[in-house]
Length: 261
Image (cartoon, rainbow, N blue to C red; front, side):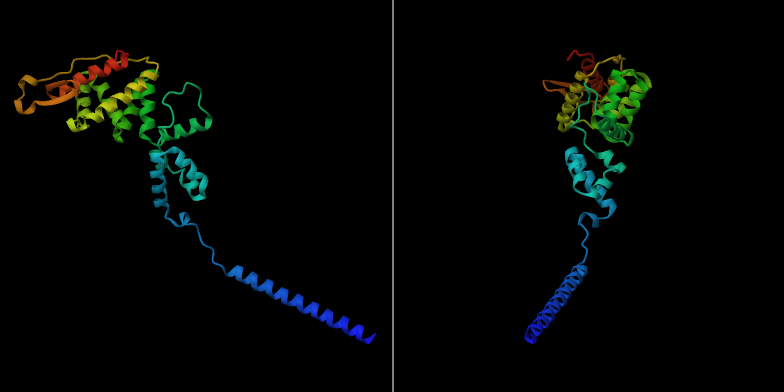
């Protein structure tokens, strides 16, 4: 009887020691966990300006990559709402003309791009406003703003419209077109510009064409040094001054708008 009680007491003491040891082990593991430093994500450690710049470069190449970046990181999600991102995001994935009503989310996104100064978005809106909706001044304003941002197609169209008007507008248009610095080495860029504009115009309902006025030129009064050779068509070489060369170009542009070519 006494040995049984002794055995019970020894077993209970052993159980208590096990509990105490288990408790101390848990406390040690908890303290170790608490001591572990909290490492911030690499993205979160970047300065805000650098984060926006990185995201803008991603956005300028692909809207899909921008969307995936927003899903991958909370820091990217916040930075994606910066005005700088909307100015540089690529919208090439979206059609210029929506034959079916776009979703509210897409429409909101594109409007933000326009309002925050995305050159491609302003160019597209300018084309729609001027040629489809016949809102001439509004369309010209969008094209002008896109041109000032260095958008090549907007510069071309804005210059063509001004040049076709004649008078003081033609001189302004001539200055804008000359700023493109079209030379033989950049002729292919001009051809690509025409091709893109032609593709856009073919998708649009044209409700406002442009009338061509004579562009004043004083080629005969200029010295031979001011006359240079410029190639506007692959098979044809035209020897003329800037005004004559761009006048030939605006004739081609009017044919594109009218659907002749």
